[in-house]
Length: 253
Image (cartoon, rainbow, N blue to C red; front, side, top):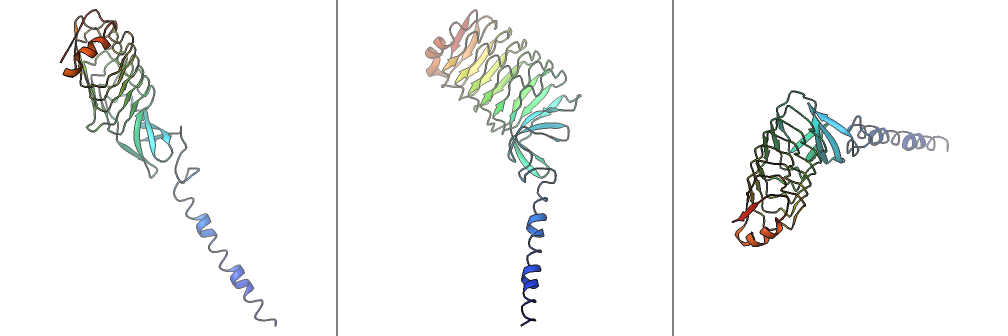
């Protein structure tokens, strides 16, 4: 009566239980993210870094915005498709507001294909920026307000088919901008989008979906600016671009 009972109790009660607990409870959890509150990594809004590049988390464990560089001498910027920080791989899906605002060094920017949005004033007043390239297969849909405003070294730009919206003043005061090529899905050109681009002589517009051109979109552009459009849109687009601040203009196929 005294021997069998005491033995089973310490066994099952004492041995097996303590072992499983420290395992699942203590080992795996700290592993995935040593400094993080959760296994998914830093919460939305957190700034993280990779080398000299800075990012802001926009979707926990999944997406980030490129928010700038600590390299004060960088002249070439390549926004990557993805970045891995502390073992977590993020898609770079936007360029943050004012990411390169008033950066007087950068000359050449390549925007990777996963970027869907270029934020407000992201590259505004980058006075030496000469070349902007969108990667093949770009998913960019929105070029934000004043995104490239005041980039006085920029001479031409090709906007990919994915872009649907060019927001207000996106390319205003680009004083050397001579030609712009716009892809097939643009629906909206914002107010003063190209205002003050006094050398802008040619816009090649491949989109047949354009519905809105904002007030003064072409103010102070080159006299007799030519807008090349799809042949079945010549008449409609002549009306759409009328009285947008330009002195004179031609719409042709």
